[in-house]
Length: 148
Image 1 (cartoon, rainbow, N blue to C red):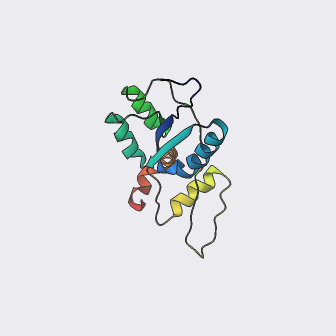
Image 2 (image 1 turned 90 degrees about the vertical axis):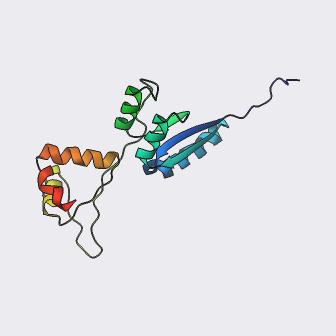
Image 3 (image 1 turned 45 degrees about the vertical axis):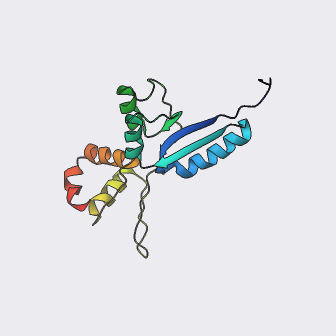
């Protein structure tokens, strides 16, 4: 016998990259408090998340970089035109302990710092993709290859 007004709990399932894990934990907690709906987000490497979606694993939401979502929409694994910008990522510079913190106020100062660095590393995620494009745009990508 069905009872009118019975609250049927629905859990929304999502997948995201590790880059947004802490942010999504905070947002899902706030969403639960505001709506009573539970959201469970599994945070994994972005490449692994995209592969799981491509393999047909079902999610209510896919929270990845815009270029990854674009590829998933083009291949039909994510509903077309369902993407939206919900977070922005800054790029930071780290230096070894005890070294001076460089002044970086302009793009040219960043470019010069990158050109003089002994070693460079950056994420394979959206911020790394952006930097790779930026280095190409600046015409320094080939000069940096040996230091990455």
